[in-house]
Length: 136
Picture 1 (cartoon, rainbow, N blue to C red):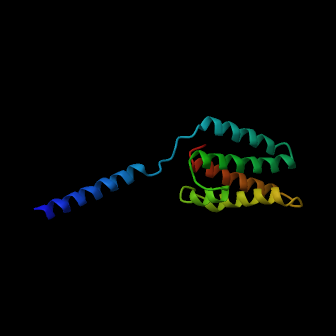
Picture 2: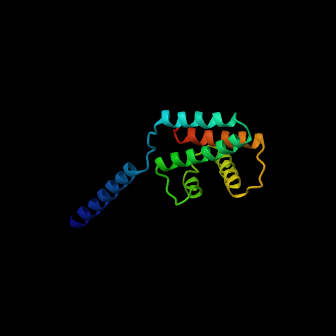
Picture 3: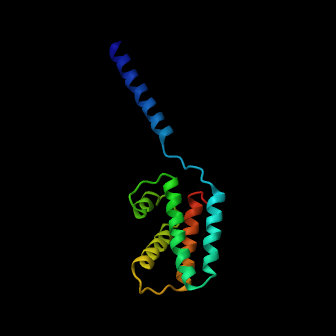
């Protein structure tokens, strides 16, 4: 009788633990879409201001994506680590990484010459990433 009671208690404990883990699972937070939409529109207006505006738009878009990652509580000391943590959430992980690497090149390699189609591709990747995170 005591063995049966002990086995039943263990089974109940495992079930309760499984339920608690399931309830505690990370749920996407609701982001302030209006804030992110306004910031996105602001940075898109920079693209129309010329070459320097395109560079700033890519850099600022990357910052905006990182802000969304942080608000969604993705862990990591740097944005790259947060992107790795979010890779299952992002529908076009390669496009987001392309944009982030381009941003890094723009910041760290002063001799780089940004092409219009590169900026367009980077902004499209970041936009999709923001949509996947619920920011747009």
